[in-house]
Image (cartoon, rainbow, N blue to C red; front, side):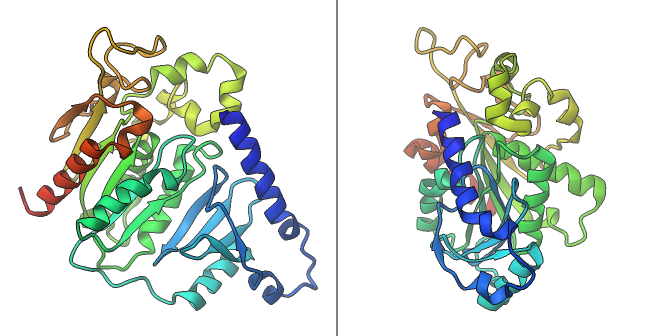
Length: 319
């Protein structure tokens, strides 16, 4: 099923972008820009690089061209990244001014899309968070370093006074930890880190993933999950030192099933069927809350959602 979804995404991308890679110099930019086309919003091969009031500049990791999507995921233009940034300025000249609460940035996991975080986004909006970003990235086509750089671009493109809270599912947490390490090592010119307030990690493979190491012995696994998935498994040692512990309050929600219930033989010990409880742990977490929920459904579980919103609220209140 995963391979079928990936092949479908590739086919859709090829259909959408074949004119981009074959565009002649005689074709005008206007001819490219003003051909609205509904899209799926980004499936496995698209990464967000700019995010402004629901408009997104996305980069195709295969064809290397960019496009601009509006808040309804309608394509408003395609071409080079510079052209799309210019077009974004026409539709939305400035990033939104900060509201009374931070921007909530939601990051999906491996082989998922930003749509998987939509239900949780709604819970934050109900709690009064007016600005949210569902960060989409090509989890199966890009190494973690590239995904972290794309997230960096999105955050640096927000208002200079904007603050951030984060919720990551699975690989999304590792992307954020990679970014934190990059900012600490390479510099943080627009001071993103001091503006980060709190984070909740859902099912994070903070110590790598045994299931990825065991499945990596099959050639199919690498083809399906790409370099990022392999970095969570057999290539974990290559990225582990690049990951930082968030220097702001964070908590972990981990799935755990009681003894005698459903088990995955590819994962050792108590787990959510994908990430073990020991793999989810990370020194520095304020708390680790266990839930009897499968890995793939953590972000949609009502109890997990309430606990996540409550933790973020408590940290903003100074508790």
